[in-house]
Length: 354
Picture 1 (cartoon, rainbow, N blue to C red):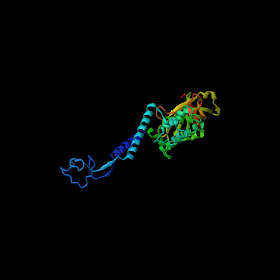
Picture 2: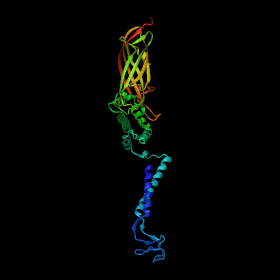
Picture 3: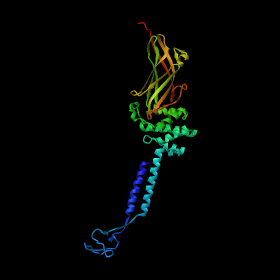
Picture 4: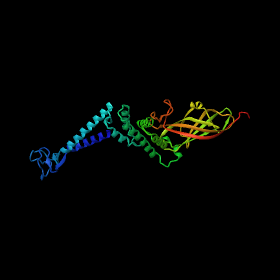
């Protein structure tokens, strides 16, 4: 709007100057004082105007007759009035914080945010939709549509950022290459994943596009006597990125040691949470020290674990938000992705005596 105002103002000033100067209607010499036609009169230092007697030698002859261009003047004055109105409106908006998008229809706002890209984030449209959500002005259908648009546009940005045939080495790209989102766009991604804005199938597809995980469980094959069992969790990602970090919560659902199930009460409080960040070509999640202590000897383990993954989506700090739904209880972190992993392991426990 600022540049439009100055453009209209420039056009108006230039047009007014040309209109006042006017257009040429005659190029016959005339006396400037009385307008007498001087065709055929030879001027010398002593020549006088036959009509008014003024000396015609000292710049008193007009060689062109102009008339103001009234239409151009009227159009230029209209441009100046429009520029003044735009300037006044812009000043009013800046001083009062008035936003014309407050009066736009929801359909218009949805169509605008549906064009969100890495070049144009449509920040103000997302902000207006967030304002309407906070004031309860959106219907359930509108809320669902906007959640789907937020996820679809993020996926489109990720596909633009990273080709489809990328490899694991893509995870070593600097974070600066990953598309950052506006704070309100991230807000709607959080709403989509946390408040049933999307179906579990669509959330799973969203997570697969961002991370595409391969999850493995492993354990130390050799332990000393009285040493707790250590479970290692490895995650490898080949997705498009678009997140700052991950958090994984692992809940042991079932431990079967040598055909005997471990008491579930022992495992209920054994919840392991750890951050996952880019390390080399994959993601090393870390290890979980279980409350299980095995006796000396060789043991066969059948482990079933329920994993929940939270993704921190990239946005303007500190507006990065974790995506997901509450997983274990109201105090647990929101989980975007859940997976149950089963693993058969062999562990040897050596006696402490040498």
